[in-house]
Structures are given as C-alpha cells and as structure tokens.
Amino acid sequence: MFRNALRATCRVLRQSEEVIERCAAKADNANKFTEMYSLHRTVLPMKSKSPVIDPTAFVATNASVIGDVEISTGSAVWYGSVVRGDSNYVRIGTESHIQDRTVVSGVSASSTGLPGSVSIGNNVVVGYGSVLSGCRIDDNCRIGAGCRILEGAHLEANSCLAPGSVVEQGKHIPSGEYWAGNPAKYVRKVGEHEKEENLQYSRDCTELSEKHAAEFLPYGTLYRQDN
Image (cartoon, rainbow, N blue to C red; front, top):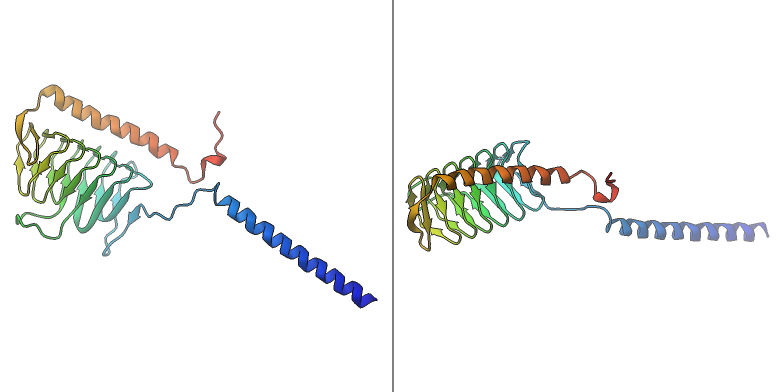
C-alpha cells in the first residue's frame, strides 16, 4: 500500500514538472514578440580593419558599416544604407550624411588609374538611394536622390548634382557648379544662397540624427514610461 502511494506521488510530481516546463516554454515564446531582438550587425570588421566611428555620429540600426571606414563628428549613415570599406578605405568628414538606401564603396582598382578609395568631405549630403564608388566629394556638396558617381570622379567644394544624375568615371566637376543628367553635364553656377542652404541642410540633418540616436535605448519601448 505504501509503495502504491509512493508511485502515485512520484507520477504526480513528474506530471507537474512537465506542466511547468511547458508553461515556461510558452512564456519564452511569448517574450520573443515583446522583446527587441536583432541579429543584424551594424558594424563589421573586415581584413583586420575595423570601422572607426565618432561617438557623436549616428549609424542606423539597419545600416551596415564594414571594414576600413572612418566616420567623423556629427555625421550619419541613415536607414538601409551600406558603407563598404572592404576593398578600399572610406572616409566621411564632419556633419556629412549618407541618406537612406545609399551604397558607398571603395574599389580595389579603378580603370581610370585613380585611387579606388572614397573621400567625402564636411557638410556633404548624399541623397536617398544613391550609389558612390571610388570617388571624391569635397566639402559642402549636395548630391540629389538616386545619383550614381563612378570610380575616379571628383566633385569639388560647393558643387551640386540634380536627382538621378550619373557622373562618369574620372569626371571632374569644378567648384560651385550645378550638374544634371545621364551622363551629368554642366547646367549653371551654384548661387551663394544655395551654398548657405546646403550648409544649413547638413546641420539640420545632424540635429535630426541626434534625436534618432536618443531613441535607440538598450531596452525596448515596452519598459519606457513617458511623463
């Protein structure tokens, strides 16, 4: 009789343990929908080279910065953009912005014979969906959305590109000129008021990037309490 009671007690305990394990598993699965998980790597070392990003710079959570890349004070790599320094280095100056869905990449070799690295100066804004390969962009330039700048191209300071323009390999755009088209051609001089607007726009983008950076906390918004 005692043995039967002991067996019954053990059976109940085993069943209780199974119930507890099932409940714990369900709780874990439920947390997957409330906690913030992401396997995406925003910063990725490559060939012993790691990106160097200023603490004041902003890199969006779904952007990628890879290899030999330096990003200076107040600059930003926005959502869905990729900056690749795996084949050659990329340097981005102060308060410059790589807007959403843009690709910037160095190239190992250029058919122009010019360096395949990418140099982007200060207060430069590269518009949405653009592609830059092995080129040089000097200070205070404005690149319209959907532009393509090919290897060896050089945009001097205060120059502008209209949206959708294509700058061919090795092309040189002098300072303070506005170009447009595919292939891009000279249109007119950039006015002084436009230069000031471009500078102010880059500063506005920096201010906006600071607000975005402040929202990316180490815990989910589920735990956030607004006053």
